Each structure stands twice: as C-alpha cells, then as structure tokens.
Image 1: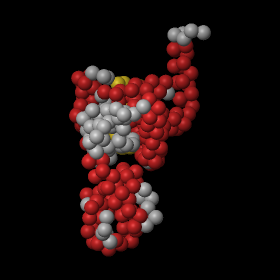
Image 2 (image 1 turned 90 degrees about the horizontal axis):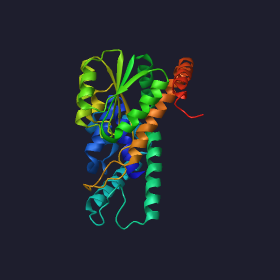
Image 3 (image 1 turned 90 degrees about the vertical axis):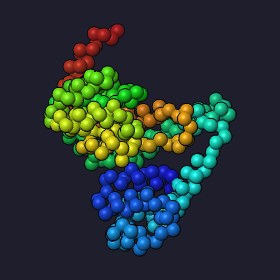
Image 4 (image 1 turned 180 degrees about the vertical axis):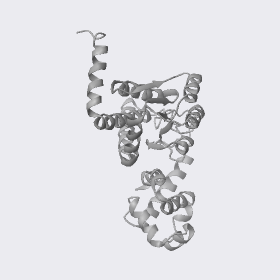
Length: 294
C-alpha cells in the first residue's frame, strides 16, 4: 500500500459523500494520531457511525482498518526519510549526478509507466461523462493554461476542431483574459494546471465563471483553487518524486498524463457524437489534404 495508497485516498475524497469526506480529511490532517487510533475514536472524532468508518476503509481499497493504519505508518516514515535526504541532490525528478546513462533511461521509463498507471486509477467515470456532456452541448471550447501545459491545450484544439467544435487557445495572457470576459453560458473553459495554483489560470477561469461559462479543470490537486471553482475536475497524477530540490521542474510524464486525459475526453466525445464527428473529420481532412505531399 504505502504512499500510493494514501495519495489515491486523498484524490478520491472530493467524490465522496459528506460523512465519508469528513473521515478522509480527518485522517489526512491527523496522520500521526491516526496511526494508532481505534475505529471507535475515529468515528467519534468525525461524528459518524463506526460502520461509516468501515465503509470508508473498504471504498478506499483497504482490506481492513489495520491495513489503512499500516499504510499511514509507511507513508509518514517515507516522508521523514525524504526530508532527511540531502546528499546527491536530484537535478530532475529522481535523476542524480551519480546516475549513469543506463540508470537515467531506466528511471525515466519507470516514472512514465508509474504516471500512466496512476492516471488510470484516478479516472472517475462520472466526471468524464459529465465533461463530455458539457463539451457536446457547448458552442465554443476555450483552453486556458501556461508554460508546458500548452502542449496539452494545442493537442486538444487540433483534435476537437477536427471533430467539429469551435476551439481556441491563446498563449497571450491578455487575450486569455479578454476572451474570458466575453464568454457566456454556451461556452466551456478547460483549465490545465498540474498544481492547480497557477495565478494566471485561476484569474482567467474566475472571469470566465463570472461570465457564465462552464469550467473543467485538469489538475493533480483536488483541493487546488481551479478545482474549487470548476464544475468538473479531472485528476491527473500528483508528482511522484517528492524531492525538495529547488532545481525541480515538472517532468514530461506530467504533460503526457494531461494529453492522455485530453485523448480520453476526445475519444468519448467522438463516440457520443459519432455521425457528426465522422462528417467533420472528412471535411477537415479534405481541407488539409492539399498541404500534404502525395
């Protein structure tokens, strides 16, 4: 279980009912205390029945309450160990100066596989369906992001335009702000931010919400500001490496996870709107065919 189990539990909390959510939030806020707490004491602290605690344990993939406490112990121990590590500071993810080329290749592949596996576990089918509902019914899709997240936005514009949706993505911050100000209830904004705390993205999405647009967030943090203001939240995996190094940058695996979510959204949209998507794919292909060498 360990760290991945606790991270998965954290990401599932927004989708739980209020009683179960209270339990999850209490455990995450009191990790040390909950390593030795009893079901009865946890139920009292969260003002729920003991049976509700048992249900929470089962719904989060633990066999029993003891297994949850063991995972908490492993998680907190690994965090302490990571905080104490100061030798051979990683320069990128877990890549250190002492790594050979072979080591680096193995680590990069492993991190990407981890990221994709974690992304699959985080996919919430009702949220995907809700997002597709919004995209199917809107007149215009606007993408909001900055930095390397623009890769996912540009990929999305290409895919959804070919499927017949009017899409736009402005790299210029002022244009993003102005575009948000003239949206209405027929528009959908997709904000992409791994941290969910990018100030420019938050501001643009806040303006878009005030204009009446519906909001979809793609982020790794379910408690982030963009998640809080969005109608639908699609979770990407949190950063696997917890290195405190100031040299850290988001890895390309984070971007790959964002593109994967876009890919799933597009595929679900295309199936939902099968006939019209086929028609638009044909029309757009004919439009660009002349640019390709036969």
